[in-house]
Every structure is written in structure tokens, then in C-alpha cells.
Length: 164
Image (cartoon, rainbow, N blue to C red; front, side):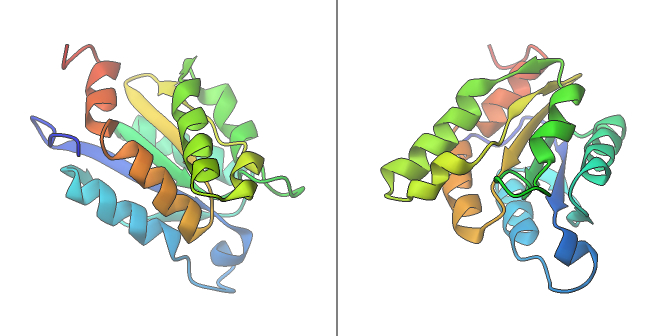
């Protein structure tokens, strides 16, 4: 597991879900991510739930502007016509970190989840913030967090040149 950050670092969770944003059902993935970030020593509030598409991009940008050092999104990474999280994330990125998203997909495949290859999630840096798109299922989120736990604090510190 990652060593806790040397100073509390703000984090944010953005949930891309038309149904959860409309109140049709309760999101169950955002709280799992909040708990994992808290366990790693990040300071994080409640998940921000937005409909798929542009509102997700705006929520990511707002979190970065508010000083988040890491933003983890969940949902909107599949192949349905409304899955737009990668499309609203990519224009925000200053630099991509493709190995992170590739590792998340590879981990799911190695665990015998063939649908992991359908995730189009991205990872990269926006200013001083690491942004990672996670899948929208509880299983996909759990698998992604398994991949991120050992490296997330180190990666976030490296974004600003620390932890070398």
C-alpha cells in the first residue's frame, strides 16, 4: 500500500451517472472510492454526482480549480452512446498517463473479467492534479482501486516534483 502523503492532500470523486444524477437510484461506487482515498490519507468530501457528458467535465475542472491533487471519476467509460467521460476528460489533460489506465484494464482481464477491455478510461495530469477515470461498476471500481493503492500517493506527489 502507498505510504500516506506527507501533508494532507485534497482529493475529489466525480460520479458520471444519468440515473444517479436524476435520483433514479443511489450511487454505490462513489462512497467506495471516497473510503479508499481517505484510507490512503487524502482529504476528500462526498462524491459529486453528475449526468454523463459535459457536466462531468465541468465537475472535474471545478475540483482541479478548487485545489484537488487527485480526481477519481467513476462511470461513463463504456461503449454506450451516453458514456462520454473520456471525451470530456481528454481536453482537460495537460499530459496523459496511459500506463495507469492500461494497468487497470489489464488487471481486470487478468482476474477473468473480459469486459474490462471495453473500458475507455483515461488517466493524466491537469495542472498539479492527477485525474483517473474508473469504470462505473462496483467490481470495476474495486479492481481499479487494487491497482491504484500501491502507487497513488507516489504518483500524486510526483505530479508536483516531490517524492523523488
